[in-house]
Length: 208
Image (cartoon, rainbow, N blue to C red; front, side):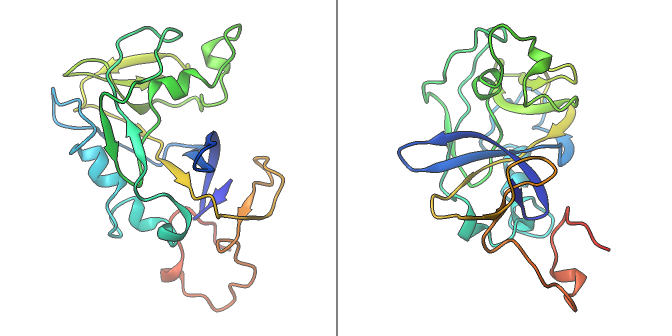
């Protein structure tokens, strides 16, 4: 899915709310998660930057985000120290309400079949990136460039793949859902931008 100058992957659907969870195909940035020994997503550097509505934040660079994404989305950041392949579905012990979050380890684990190598899962982009799941009170889990899971101090810098939930009333107007021809969303599918000022465009877009 192409939205706001970025390529996203659909990860899951909430059948009740009819919303679709997306994650960026590529790392948008690389940054620390939080100060050392502070593994909580809520109140972290990561949460602040993802949901910053100024031009310096991620949310502030999404086009008309109130019309496209769920702004009171629930993100399950429950701790899990199990090995990849044995991650449990989080039970809501620790949740955060915010427009933008990250994928948790269970969502990443669900992206491969049990008979495949972890590195073959469709969410592995051959880069290292943070997840939402703490390994302990002082360590946060991240995905390695080989597609496996590790954990490290939140004061280290790894890639960031923001995640959002598309509203149920968002419509697709073109595309076939492939990387070369992604779905385009109504209201974000500019067809005539002649004379448009560069200052009105969005980070990640191509210009000619």
